[in-house]
Amino acid sequence: MKFVVQVRLFPTPAQEAALADTLRLCNEAANLVAGIAWQTKTFRNYDLRRHTYGRLKEMGLSAQPAQHVIKKVTDAYTTVKAQAKAKLRKPLAKPVAFRADAAQPFDDRCLSWQTAERTVSIWTTGGRMKGVRFGCSDEQAHALAAYRKGESDLIHRDGLWLLIATCDIPDTEVIEPDGFLGVDLGIANIATTNDGEHHSGKHLNAVRHRNRELRRRLQAKQTKSAKRLLKARRRKEARFARDVNHVISKQIVTEAARTGRGIALEDLQGIRERVRLRRPQRVTLHSWAFHQLGAFIAYKAARAGVAVVHVDPAYTSQGCSACGHIDKKNRPDQATFSCMSCGFAEHADVNAARNIAARGVASWAVSHAADDAA
Ligand SMILES: [Zn+2]
Image (cartoon, rainbow, N blue to C red; front, top):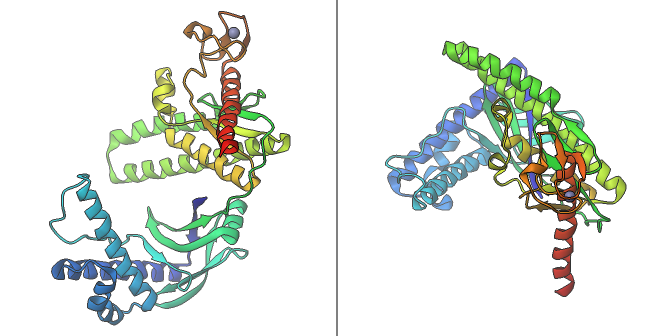
């Protein structure tokens, strides 16, 4: 199972200057290579290397960065051509171009991680630079130390220096689940389990509402500084949501592991359409945040050997988890479930989570019946 870890670098002013110079040079080189590829109609890595390698060395790139620049260019052409073929964009009319601060990949020979010290050593145009500090959570540090594989991308975005690393966790043996913990995703309660555990979105929603007000005022201004402030706000909100998702996913996986159960989640395709909400709430619904929570749960569960199944979310909120009766009227209001047929009453989110848990059990049984037959 692959996932990315993004960490922020905290370079000293001298280190920052070297990083900036490195990105600039790599992208200048990439634009040069892209131009030569275009003129000579050379788009294959090996052929392009013969045409450009000498020039890149002259520019001050050492062997590995030069090869990464060439690969970055051939990859870009491959992508663009595939997109044009799929009619997702027009065919190229001029060489592909790279921004001065476009991402640059570094392999293990050009970038090494000292995870315990929270530093990296990285190749720059000014030579090898050691002891560049970075920040990350303990969990990210563990993932980097244990599972990081391949190249990492150096990125400069909104004034921040970032490294994006790919981690690959080997699949652990999934423990045969004894029942399922059903998780319902929502707005007021970000996640509710069939055990009746609510993971509140109160703080997160408060932050979002505050930011929405601020956004309205800033958007009216239209100035450069207002735009910058808006961007910074959005990122801060995203960071906050990520922290909340980490906490919730950890609690859910811990609970499932402790009780020997698997985890049943809604299949998130189309969650925006499914969740019908009053207008003010609709603004706070960010489907990416749900997808992120799902991804965090999947990742933590995989590490713990906890089974995860995704179930069809249709009617999980209107259907009775006691008798199966489906009726809109079963939901007199947002928070309440009260069955018109059998009289079963429960918090609406808990009822939905019970339905999801039941579908998890059914789905597991079906997929394992297939395994047994095979
Ligand atoms: Zn009922």
